[in-house]
View (spheres, rainbow, N blue to C red):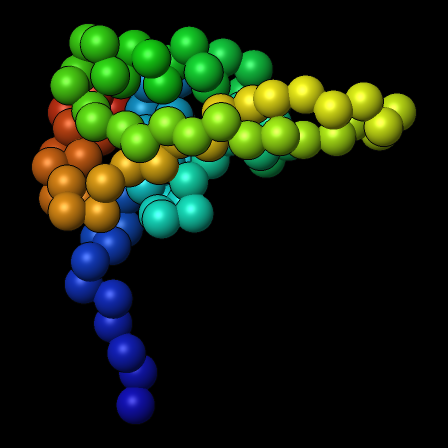
Length: 102
């Protein structure tokens, strides 16, 4: 029998950078997203900036944790992994639908 996931209503595709940042975060769920993944997956260079805007302008609450990475030349650096709070999923989907305008 087919199972339906009622927690994740199909969201329309993002129409601006704020919506794209929130879309990636909603899709990632508990795993979260860092800026390297955002660039690799979506060519989204301003992910960190737009994520800060989501917090400051739209009241989205995020869990941030520093994360080490190693680049192709073996140099290490730090990035930040952003995660939404699962118990605010409905509220974040409402914000997404509100800000997802051209």
